Length: 203
View (cartoon, rainbow, N blue to C red):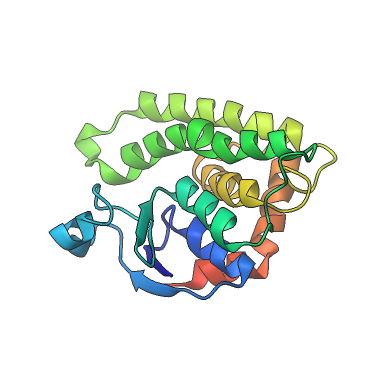
């Protein structure tokens, strides 16, 4: 399988997933904003000209959550995903989708307003609102992680999705200073050898 990846992007989730599962992969490496991501050839794989994308034989799939679900279903042999009859299955679904549905929208606002827009177009009110919202979103994870090591029993795809979002959100917002459970969760993630290998790819 071939992963299209740029460091410091959502495609870290996919490299991390493959490293956790011990799956072989080929890598096509970009930098964010790379003109090669806007070519017709690459847009045939990802119409937005972004990462990640994954080639698996005749299948090409993009969007990080879809790729995680695809790989876990097709190639993980039942690992990193609770069975539907597991008492953790509902938690798995909830926190898997919470990453993009709740955490990443304010993260996106902060990134755009503080990194991508030129200074004259930035809006501090937007940043402050997004940081407050992000703090609230991480607060729900703080409550859920009380007495838990991972989001859905054993380490799972929900931690790939939401854990990455927590790391990025905590780094950008300072919203974890009063959240010891989230802070410890991030430390557990960053201590994982597969996370560390994924972070090193392309750097």
